[in-house]
Length: 189
Ligand code: HEC
Image (cartoon, rainbow, N blue to C red; front, side):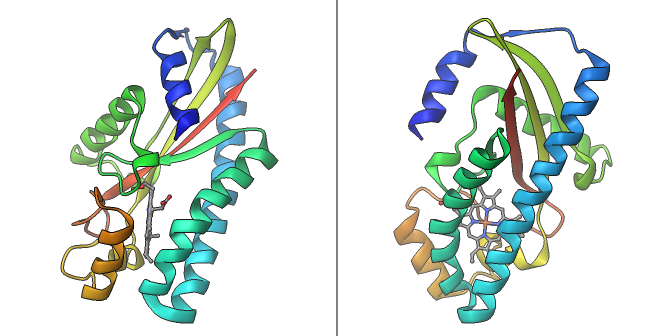
């Protein structure tokens, strides 16, 4: 959470640079690869935990493992990796202003008929004299997600556990196919 506040302060003074198409394409490909690795790791942990002890057990895994995996992938890939949402569960994932704007644009594109799986965004900004490539990709809601992010599908014991861990949880009431949030990747170059 602390680092995100620092980043936020930096971004307040950042300047958008004109896109450099050729370079960007390579960075986009790299970012997508990192997201694939990140998403696969998150999903396999979730699947294993659900199988072992159902959604109540899996909450603890999401609560502890998700931030751990995020940290790990950031270190190993050389990218700053995060997840955010317009309706965040964890206060550590509250979006920065630019992230909010991009996700609002994703929602508008989805409303106009776009498939959430295809929604992404990239730009280059300057922070403290250094160029930073930023990439975001929408995360669609699958059926399994409704165990913890749905409406009435969420079991009472899951609801109780979520309320005690995340008193300001907003990540509820999602339906299959909704945009649950987005991956955010950044790299200085
Ligand atoms: C077992 C319960 C559970 C299931 C199932 C689950 N999540 Fe979550 N999700 C959580 C918890 C707990 C957090 C908060 C993690 C943290 O503290 O960093 C979270 C956080 C997130 C976040 C980060 C933004 C935020 O709201 O804090 C995203 C994005 C997300 N989940 C997407 C999904 C998707 C997509 C699926 C289905 C593939 C899914 N989740 C399935 C429990 C769950």
